[in-house]
Image (cartoon, rainbow, N blue to C red):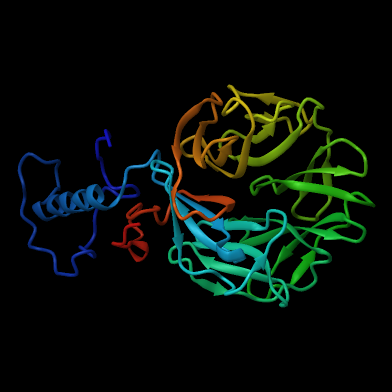
Length: 375
């Protein structure tokens, strides 16, 4: 792959008992030539782990897991997308065993809990909150959703508060913030409806968990698109500045806590897709770099990896093939792109987990999540 292999991602400097081999550690033997305190068994374990990484984990742009929601036979299923190769691999089994409809952008990921949430309605059944394992793809729970008005439009997980926030469609098409009980599916509304009338939304939303803000793009009535900032504590609107008319549409939003910036993937008047930032106070958009491709680009989902400053995008150029793009958020320039292979199902959403389990093998020292299986 052209990369040197260092320590295993997530590995601490001090290794404990050897959990991988399932045997007692050999007596510690001092080994000259290594740093003070190192022992031969530690050195051998490190070498073994490095060999396992070299054989089982394709080295990606960063050691994150990029998860997708796909639609086999009209059903819904989680999948893993490897950005360094473009391989899309189904994870587990379809969730409903029958067609499941989803609307808006009702998928969210709990990184520390290894869970993916999505709202779907199986044929002839009540709407459910599906909770999937990001390790196996198995359905962990699927309670019926209740109290959601006309339906859940968006979802975002707040790890600090352990809350699943949702934006609801209520009344005559207005929007209202709420939380969803992941065990029971019960929805609790926050504050009041936001526009006092119809408020149309696309799929662009993001959460600032530290600042307690939920962002989304919406258009009240015949008004221009606006960036809504909602207080997640009480559901009240903080601000809703209009976006510039030069922006045809906002395809995706992503909050970067480290840089305190709201990134957006925008449609230009010519139908191209380009990265930029939004001033949350004024709505002003600052584009970065160049359009991802020249000409129309259909996009299916985007996910931000703050640790590597990369925005991953699943898309397809006009008259081209499905591709996963990695865009440098500092410059807006394409860092990498790979044609997609593997399962041919449509991608409905893209989410990222920088920690527990890499797409095709080992990505951390969360040993309970390790697997020897390859795509």
